[in-house]
Length: 360
Image (cartoon, rainbow, N blue to C red):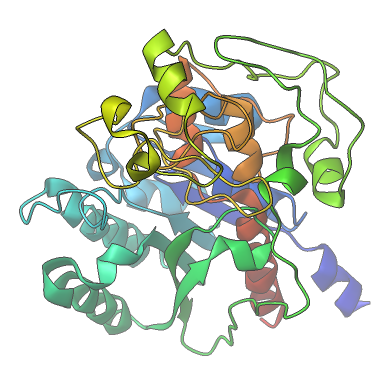
């Protein structure tokens, strides 16, 4: 009897730096969590979150303006999740030493110190390990341990958890002393999903085109999962309007090709080494960034078509289901997707958290 009650129990979550809600969606899909409050300073992110979580209270303000004592008094909070902006730590960014975003983890720490959840999850890019020669990471670890949390520190590739994308992130799970927690294990039998596995049922559209009808029935279990409870008409499958010159450049790119593979006469002179990069049809995607609709950004050109990924293709590669709604311009929607924790990975982490809390 007690065991059945334990299985049915739901735990309350606060999602800080919530973005469009990737982490919250993964937790919700376990059927074990209620997202009772979310916060993000970006109003479009909050609009997207509210479209998908109409029951959740959303505060669109700076985390430094949040009164966590009042939040704690109003709610019984079991779990806090959040990933402060990663640009200050990112290995692909400029990594300015005095970037104020690098200290937002202190505000996240303030939330944990006041709320005192049983478990918290802190997500960030792996550049956090080396930022300021590791001082920021060691400071972070020390302050959480000082207030009574044991830490499970994990460098995770989403590819190993059923997401069709190679995406490395740090997940630090803090749990109150006395709790037992284990981060979800990698399944040795799990075969990495490819771009073909993820998006081959979506309409084939060219530069500056749009389609709302699926190309075919789902061809893989992943596609079935992405289309569960989806509306009849496909959302956000519209390609960017690329210039004639850019389409010509892309037409010379072989599958998996980069800027260096282009004929010298048309090779763009600016950009990074992985700019103007074409993806592979039979391999997983590389990391989906906020700029996946821009060919001059990191590798994001469709494996078979001379254009960048559409918003819906990027969402699929991040494991957002087709029913999920984003808000604002195409650039804003792509930002919401590129900055998110992949929901399928969040679901696996959610299950591990629920198992730990059930032991209480």
